Length: 201
Ligand SMILES: Nc1nc2c(ncn2[C@@H]2O[C@H](COP(=O)(O)OP(=O)(O)OP(=O)(O)O)[C@@H](O)[C@H]2O)c(=O)[nH]1
Image (tube, rainbow, N blue to C red; front, side, top):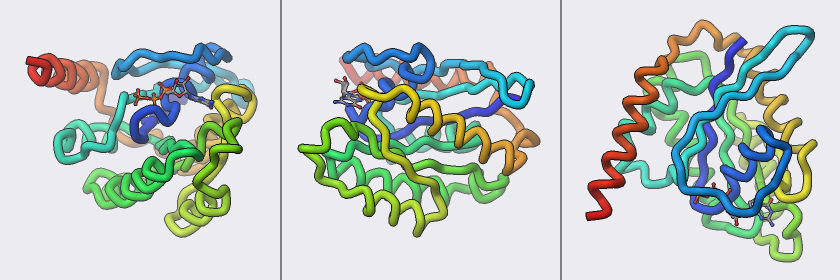
């Protein structure tokens, strides 16, 4: 089975750290600002499952990124929406992201892709500004799942978070969804890089 997962959230919440933790088991501290799709295979019930993970640098500017955003929603079988427990603005952004994802045409037309709300940087509990209960309540009220993790300190909880999402994707039988395809992904990513280059002049 193939499962496409989009990781979203505001700047510096640890989207790349979570993705790299899953892929390499390591926390390397600093991560580039690159839009990337990674693949990761593992065995579940003696069957190979491949995760394709789309990690975006920052997905909050929806007005600029609308068409790319819609492509992501179309491509995704599941979403990981990340905030930092030390950054309330990032939590509010996840709340808005849930509404935006759920109101897009592709999300409504397809079987609803599972969403997991992830509070990252749990190791920084002394700087916490978002309570666990708030994350749990947000997930409960919006039909999402919730967990808190630390990409810096704990590989196992990150692994469980991704694997739990895959289980729900399987349950939702989303494999019938029409994929964006490799060419579509390359095209949409080229558009992002082209725009960034233009923006920098
Ligand atoms: N203490 C702590 N720091 C973390 C954790 N996860 C990520 N970081 C740090 O937070 C910073 C941002 O991490 P990234 O993974 O680059 O965050 P991002 O969301 O991909 O950021 P953008 O690419 O800018 O959108 C880095 O300095 C990481 O080392 C965590 O669980 N605990």
